[in-house]
Image (cartoon, rainbow, N blue to C red):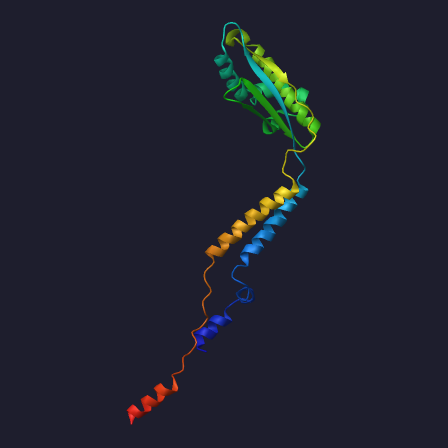
Length: 218
């Protein structure tokens, strides 16, 4: 073996020599297993989250129409998570404004003048209390301007205590982690350089060729 090939073989680390004997596709199963373990661990240690939703509806007065109510419902959905409303709801919710701001969201439909106020918590009772407190504070604030907007905001349904978590289960996080790990393993497999021989195998001339060369020299 030439000296350059010997130096190249000696410079390879033990890890490189071990992985050199593995199949080329080994990053794919490794990524699947690692991703599944990571996803399963996350799902097992993360506390379940519960979601409670309260609904309020915008009702037009005699001086307004349904389109005005629809427009104000969309406006109230943006106001619901502002500090002016959340500061009025914090006492009834039993949590500070920062918690309400991070765990409460408001959504509305483009077809119905209704606002859905959802709260997320690791305690079902607290999720219910936060959603109801924000909905109550929003209707109270809207009542202060109903003479100007000609739209009333009424409580449609109260939030109830959730009985099942809304967060992903450990089985789902395991599946998602396995998919993500398999994707990363596949990318590593595509980007991995192809294995090349450490040194070229020396060629030996065929006997017939060597004999012909001797005759020609004579």
